[in-house]
Amino acid sequence: MDETPFGELTPLRQTPIPDQAAARLRRNGARALPIARSAPSGNEPLVDLPDFGIAGENYYFSERNPPYWRRIDGAIPDLLVRRGVAEKLASVNARLAHAGLELFVFDAWRPRAVQSYFHDVWMPAELHKRDPALSGAALLEAVECYWAAPTSDAASPAPHETGAAVDLSLRWRGGELLWMGSLFDDVTEIAHRDRFETTGTQDISYSDEEARANRRLLHWVMSDAGFAGHPNEWWHFSWGDQLWAAFTGGEAHYGLASPD
Image 1 (cartoon, one colour):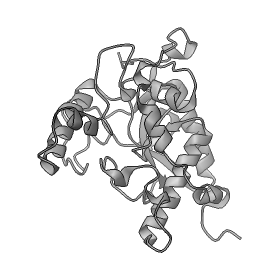
Image 2 (cartoon, one colour):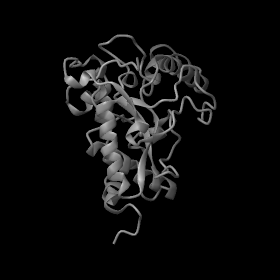
Image 3 (cartoon, rainbow, N blue to C red):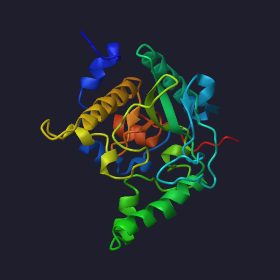
Image 4 (cartoon, rainbow, N blue to C red):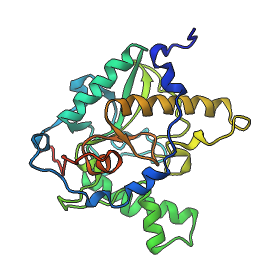
């Protein structure tokens, strides 16, 4: 008998996240994949997630956002995604509701100014501070483990500029976030989706064990709805962009988007 409050979702907390090594390799070249701009979904508008019953707060617009602790220039308060993505997230929320859970979104469509700041300024400075010898191509490679390069190239958009990508977690409905083992935006290996899957049972703490179960639940409930997750970030999922196509073998159909 299930003694936790997760009910029918309990098996998802017990199912390991697959090794993400292959997914890390498939990321390479994802932004060169074709985008089927003629697909009907390619012209979907951006919609606001609260209108679909999805909770959240834009992390970069907030001032309670460690490790930054300030509003990022260019950030917006809205949580915008393509309509098809919003509808899929609403279906995930409906499934989670049976266990008293819901999604909580940190970020969705992202202005290029925010993408540029983290890719070009914050992340290189943070990495250089931790390793002053890191520079050139090695520095850029380390940055792009987490932050995609901004661009105005319609054939190669950053995922969050398409309205297809969301950063999110789980929480009890209207209440506390589930423990995932790291801060959102912790750009170190602790954020890797499969971080806790390789830890031996003799070495894992109760905190890590809970984080592993919650990451599994988030991973599988999103995967079951058709989303693909970023291997280096437990919080990042997308549907319909080039990264999703690289992971699933599908055809990308969302290109650059604008709230205008």
